[in-house]
Amino acid sequence: MNAKDEIRQFVQKLLTESGDDQPLADDESLLLSGRLQSIDAVEIVTLLEEKFGIDFAEIGFDRERLDSVDAISTLAGHGQSNRA
Amino acid sequence: MRYAVRAVGGHQGRRGMCDEEARIAETLRGHPGARDAAVFADGDIIRIFVVPDDGYLDDELGRKAASELVLQKWRKTFDLSQLAKGAESATVGLNTLGWNSSYTLQPIPEEEMREWVERSVENILSVSPCRVYEAGCGTGMLALRLAPHCERYTASDFAPAVLSRFRAQLVTLPALDGRVEILERRADDFAGLERNCFDTFLLNSVTQHFPNLSYLTKVIAGAVGVVKPGGRLLIGDIRSLQLLPVFACSVEAFQAAPETGLDELRARIRRRIERETQLVISPAYFLALRSAFPAISRVEIVPLRGRARNEMTHFRYDAILHVGAAEDDSIAMEFTDWSEAQGGLDEIRSFACSHPGQAIGIEAIRNARIAGDVRTLVSLENGAADCSVKQLREEVRTSAAQGIDPQALLDMQDEIRDCAIFLSWAACRRDGSYDAAIVPRSMLREGQRPAIDWPRPDAAEFVRIATAPGQQAVRKELEDRLTAYCVQNLPATAGRIAIELVDALPRAADVLAPGDLRIRRHHARLDGASVARPSPQG
Image 1 (tube, rainbow over the protein chains, first blue to last red):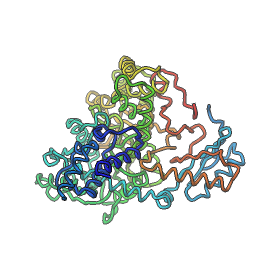
Image 2: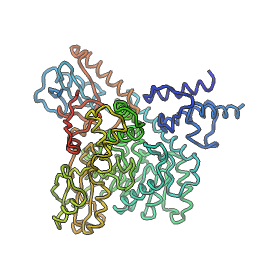
Image 3: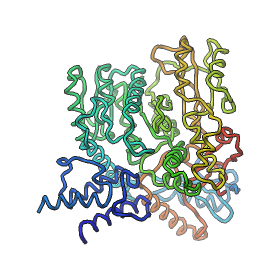
Image 4: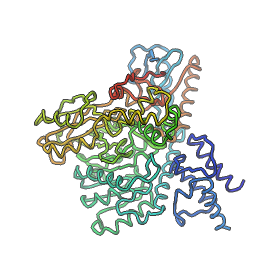
């Protein structure tokens, strides 16, 4: 499973846990649309920190950068390339 | 259909009970997960209401571990907010990062946040605090304003990045040098604090992030210990459980596209309530604290002040818990029912002026702040015709505006200078209507909040006193275990029982369908519509 698939699956799980069973497109807004709450963003942050080596203390926290599967995948890609 | 009910168990009394129901209640009380139980027969179904045992939920079913996880998530959420763009350049004393509107999902405008914090500060200063302990101080929005007026100010928070931001602001204010002590700790941690060493305990806009009501009760128990007699706990900006349906309706109606159908809107409102992730609390919880904590001598429930139209002023309240026997501050007054009154401020002014020198009470004043939201919800509950959100908005917009804005009533103090006005939401009405007391200043001591015998809620309002965010799985597990236990011990009940967890046992007349959106009584009067007290099933 590539990084984007993993992220998509992770986000889908968060949505399901919050009772949201609507379809999800990769470019669809998650946080700014209210589909996920700020406390859910913590789960995504933890995933990015632990699996993709992102240091939010260094890059800052910006909801826009976590707002879709596409955006999260881009961020994860930066983390991976920094680690490579 | 109304229940043809026979109630058994707890404080329900034994009148009308039958043997089977009595056996069920007695059996369930033998399960360690059930603190108390009431049983209601409804045709072939036996409805069982159980007050769960907190210790069992925490330890046996893992709620404590889940609560710890929730606290960790919130800590990280708050810390992350201080890693956002603009955190470093935020106005000193007004770092509102993370304060987003439920309506627009965008940051709440700074001028609204400024009014919110300044009103909170005014309220707190009105009781002349001297030695203050604040839990959940955040970046110090209150502390930076209050500390100059206090002899001692101890502020605590559990989020280290948030406290760093607080400290960074503090060093820019030399006047506060050495006056504020900052502790990094959770709200329920009172270790090392002497008993009776503060006169004021503050917990502002924090309770919604607590994992459950037990945690809040633990915090209150600790706070009561460190506040000296004559002091008070000021718990502010609490989301109201009674107004949760109106709030959900307000947000969903705002966000819905004009062409959205009303059935879809109803479904979204239900989903919003069911998915609530925060602890939303009834004023009834605070009113009931007096029986658990004898040191709490009096409880006030006050709707938030402010002219801004936002979710704080519309749907939140402050709870003031007075500690220890105070001087005799009681002021007697008659309450006049205002729920049918058509008039506005002028009528109240005339009413007050017609009782010179007397303290007067006014009961069930319609709340203009949320009158439109209440009307929208009542229309939906009454099964409004299958039209669109656009048509519903038009219907609500063109109906006569009713009620009085609580802040407008408070502002009348500037006109009637010899009187002070106090407001209360203690009655827990689900349409947000409120009670007021107009008291001649000659009856008050300086800075006194008089003890008023405010209208109280129906017993029904104590049945469910808070949401249980993130506890669906744990509560379902307990319901399943109780069902299995009941069937195992009383096989004849198999397939006939329905168990529901509650905060206090209901009376027969209080039994409502779970998750019911409907609001009762005063809505009917408010709209002149025929909204009967809802029956459990229909």
